[in-house]
Image (cartoon, rainbow, N blue to C red; front, top):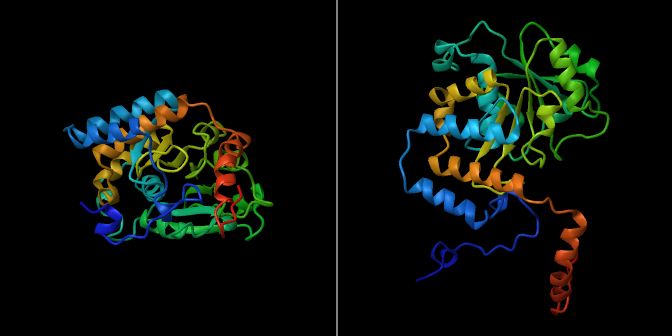
Length: 293
């Protein structure tokens, strides 16, 4: 029997870049694969599965609630929609059908309006929102963020990513203070970040993670935060979320991956280098090959 690479004439890949979406992100460990396979082979009442795995994860992470979604980008779109729909059944079903006389602007630092493989603005638009940039491409202070807020602001969005401008941009904690002062929710996209509690503890109302990056789960995403807001995100399953639903296997796979991730001792940079060094030394013995960590 031909290999998958042979069958589909695929290019073999050696990943020397890390958890990159263009390379398939990560390869989950066997326990996570087993959880995915269990999900594939069994039936569940899906709403019950979503609610109870979310509650289980919330308990592990010490947050009010959580929900597994199909990916971090879907988490942005559904979180934005949640802040516009706010539980209203009509807006849920007719989000894009016509204009709604409710706040729909999403304020974010100009330096965070990036393309991470797709534009942040596209995800906001999918959720029914309109991007309003605060500050400048290389600068956004708390006062500049606050200056972009008006009566039509639905939420503040903060993108925590290497794609974004880092210098002279306010912190998550500072953005949370501005959001609280103006009575607005703060959504933090922390897709590739490693600390699953940090930004919630710094005051974010919703935090979004990729399930397949640092967590090394299946293709999926996690949205955690305040109970009411997470509940509104869940309701998007009957709105735009229907087009980006996560399967039972993804829900169980990510839930187990998070449990494993929290239990594992975090590997330091020095430990990674030590682990790679013998491999690099062997590679450098091959004619024409030069490798380094």
